[in-house]
Length: 304
Ligand code: XMP
Picture 1 (cartoon, rainbow, N blue to C red):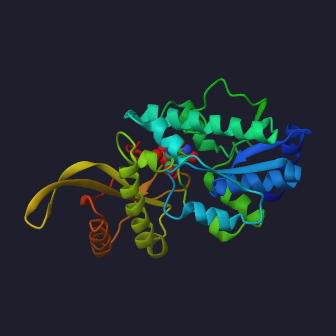
Picture 2: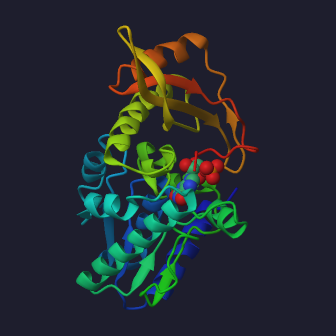
Picture 3: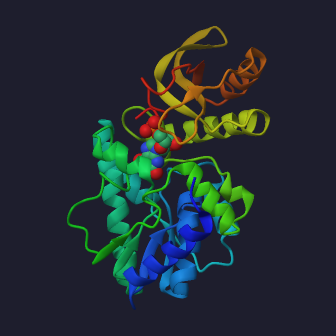
């Protein structure tokens, strides 16, 4: 539990001190972490904060349009970087290499935008579990361990680096952010890239994006998971008419958690699973659907 009012007051003061007279860029994804940071920084430095939304091509269905309308009042710069990301990811199959490539691309785009806008500082919505898991060597969160060391900013501001996810949500409430943002499901920085095993291709992203949208439609309102999504595990045999064919195996993950550090699979009714699977197998190229019943630990929530 945090003392929300005190946290906001201190964070605003610290951002103001750290920024001095400089301009600050930040990645605004529309998730609760970056939205809280944007609200704190706007209070601290007003329009010297330059929020940037990067469409990596790895976002969920309709996400870019939704962010544009949610932040219609903020002076949000939208960078279409999908081609750059797919190019950077081509041929990479190792999960850590994928995260590093995404992290590197992210920083380069921000360096570029910072130069364009005259910003010298980078603000990030890193939260406590991101740091623990990167420092502990579990994996590189794209905004921590994946950061190239030759970063060209004169400084990094991380206002919520000591908070857990549920505390960030409390602060979001204290800042008066809409419930849609306050309770938004977590979505990883590397996006759908960590939800396809092996190489990231446009074809796989199209399939996983569609499957993910179905999972959210089927589960969010009815079962209120902490997080739910679809992932592409690989190719397996299926049937179309009388013919055997190779199609995608889609895994569905739905978990309850307090802060993402541990998680338990949702006990979903069989009928709900079955309805969802029927819809997912309507996506061209999908052969079968499996439901992941592994807690964290020993599994992680994401697949890579
Ligand atoms: P894992 O897979 O580590 O996920 O059990 C725990 C929570 O963190 C999210 N996650 C990330 N968030 N950058 C992020 O901003 C990342 O690289 C990243 N990797 C995982 C994941 O979605 C889950 O909520």
